[in-house]
Amino acid sequence: MGGFNVTALDERLKVLIEGGVVIPKAADIAKNAVKRLKDIYGFLPEDRVSVFVTHLATALTRLERKETVGAPPPELLKEVEATPFIKEALLEIDWIEHEWGTELPVEEKQFLSIHYVSLIQGAKGGEPS
Image (cartoon, rainbow, N blue to C red; front, side, top):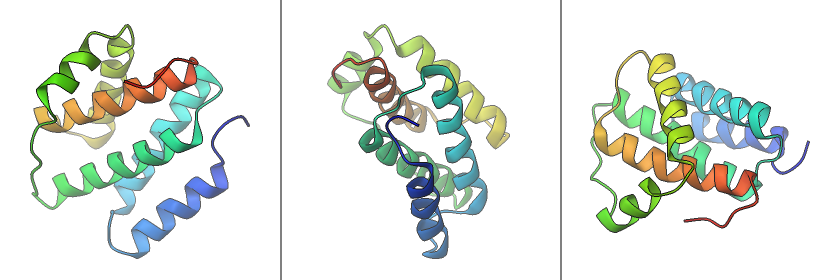
């Protein structure tokens, strides 16, 4: 399959759900987000998939629980926004909002853009931001 292991991903999400860290809907969206990227890019680096899935599932769960998160460091965000992968990342974030059924807070979108850019760079053989 190249890169990440689907069984390991399922196990990780199962542990997060059973531990009450994430809700099932958030885990499903995170898994489907990875499937979308796999369909587009073929290869996805396992370490980045793991970080991305965990962040996305916990971020959506935080929203469901009405918890908030601060913004990422501005210099990191500026660097990510300057990459050629930002447009692809923003399209995927739009898909997440559609699946979730509501717009995400700006701070969550910023963090997700960082994770998406890192994942897309890894898929295309580039260095992480």
